[in-house]
Image 1 (cartoon, helix red, strand yellow):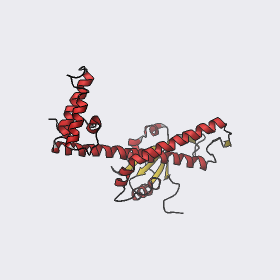
Image 2: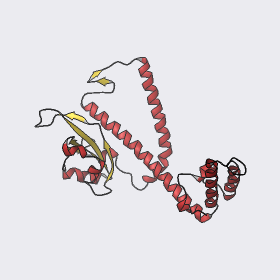
Image 3: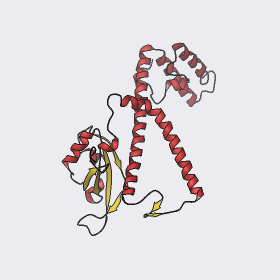
Image 4: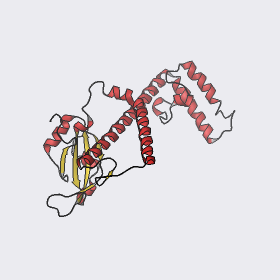
Length: 258
């Protein structure tokens, strides 16, 4: 019998048998008998694909009908599903935060959605309809994703609700020349103890004029999301480090100040 620890977690045995994870042993065996007929070498052409599927079914029935192995498999499967849900939730928050930061920068420069170099442009009815449909689809997709991950998020925040991502984030800028060309996520993370940084979001490179420079230069910008507000405040208090031109709160001011 193949132990659960060595099972192929790329294959969900419950999905393979088309049964819920709460199925009883008799339901599992009944589903196995029904499904195995579709791939049994005596019933269908023994192609490599059919043989592989039939072998997976053997592994599935062995594991799911053995109480000890089933418990191990269920625990491993639950952990995998939880990680997937937490990753999806983080990706969603990261995308929203990046859009919010870029919108704030555009507004600070006097720009606005639908403008080019500060000059408002007109939209055709067709373009407006396309944008409306795109926004509607994005809203529906986001709602679907949130529904899938809300249970995982609830568990993650059950003990302690973290401060808003943007409140515990700082924005850093560096000149994209010389050693600045080598600054990436690893280079930024190595400035802090392991575990202090939750995420790093890279924004679009922009040309700006710095004091002492005759021409505008290209600056790289990133937002570092720390595990807690206290850690973020400590990072700001320490000031800039080697290779970094400037750092500031991502929200534009220290959380809690007016």
